Each structure stands twice: as C-alpha cells, then as structure tokens.
Length: 67
Image (cartoon, rainbow, N blue to C red):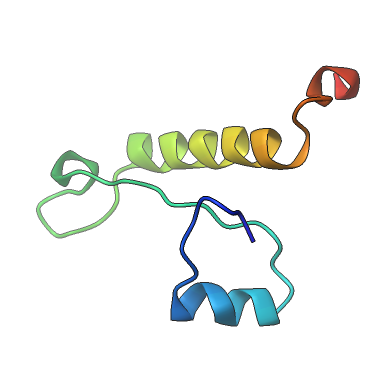
C-alpha cells in the first residue's frame, strides 16, 4: 500500500483482494455534473494522477531506466 495514504476500511479490503497500489485523490465540485456523475475530463485527470503516483511510488528513482 502507498505509504502516503492512510489505510481506510475500503483500502484494507482491496489489499486483501490483491491490489498493491493505493493513493488519495482530491475531487472538487467541478468534477461532477448536476446529477453527481463524474465528468469525462475529471476521469482522465484522475487516471493521469494515478499513473504519476504509481510511477513515483514504484519506479523512483530508477524510472528513467524503464523508458
């Protein structure tokens, strides 16, 4: 589990199911439409933030060797 993330009950369940990487994402009201659905731009930004978090947590400082 990512050391920068406090383990919630949900994170502990995911860890038991074999997920190895967790991080915290911050959402804003602008990320959701009037019906409470996540908008497409926010979803892409979340995936980008997760990708960067994973690279930094798992591959740093040797990440350039994986390019």
